Length: 310
Ligand SMILES: NC(=O)c1ccc[n+]([C@@H]2O[C@H](COP(=O)([O-])OP(=O)(O)OC[C@H]3O[C@@H](n4cnc5c(N)ncnc54)[C@H](OP(=O)(O)O)[C@@H]3O)[C@@H](O)[C@H]2O)c1
Image 1 (cartoon, helix red, strand yellow):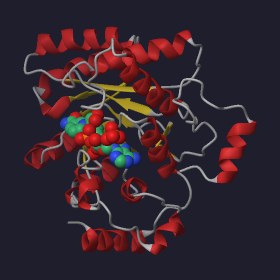
Image 2 (cartoon, protein in one colour):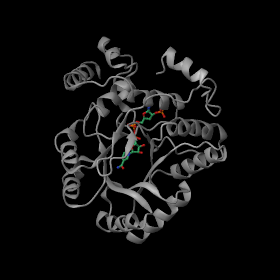
Image 3 (cartoon, helix red, strand yellow):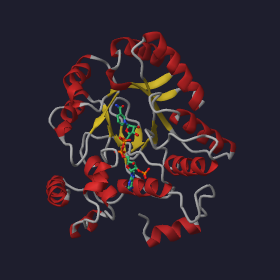
Image 4 (cartoon, protein in one colour):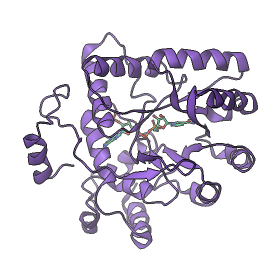
């Protein structure tokens, strides 16, 4: 959350975001922490945006579209990552419309674009990629993954070729299923990939055992999905107070508690919480500022979460 001083700074710098709903602010002046992408040394903000479910809206519904526009505008003020996939209904179309609108408004903000190939068929994957380029209006994706390891041998060959041609900058693989972890690790060891994406949260720490250390060893950037377990974790702590010591790391909400836990792991590069709510976007971005918990406090965070969560 913004404190009073930051609020006044934003007011005086004129960064009141015109496209945000009444009273909402751009987080432009927030020092959102970045991490380095190991393969290139490029910096990337640690808070990105997922679009599964939250961006499945009718593009003709102006009220819903305004909300997504405000979410994207806030995120882009830091140059963050937007993550999508052809699997997510019409989310890529919604993203494209938002980006188009921001371009027309001459909003000159950076974007780190990330989508996926999601098909059992190689040629269908190639067509899908072209369709994603069209929907996002992207000539060069920053990152393209093989979604859920589907037909990964073939799609990785295509993505390698596209990378050579300059049609994308980074490539990777994703999963959110623990049953795919063994195969996932094998690919991380044997293939030349830049990014991996998998699930990790304060209530699901399986990745700490193999995936996160392996990513560090192989110098692969890590993007975390399901940091809130698709929102389920909020229900588990509903009505429960944060610990008194949360203020020592400038945590003011359960969302920030859970996000700070994730991004304070040294192998994590970016977390991509999904949201349809501009206020949640700002709240999530603010998790990547201020002090981070050390190892001792991370353990304490897990103990506290387990003691209060239902
Ligand atoms: N295999 C794969 O490649 C794979 C698998 C799973 C996910 N993903 C990616 O990872 C992204 C994130 O995972 P996810 O969509 O499963 O969900 P998630 O990020 O764990 O949770 C999203 C939910 O949290 C709520 N939320 C967000 N910020 C909040 C806040 N500050 N306070 C309260 N509620 C908040 C959202 O509701 P509001 O809209 O109300 O904010 C939404 O319902 C996906 O969208 C997708 O891009 C990839």
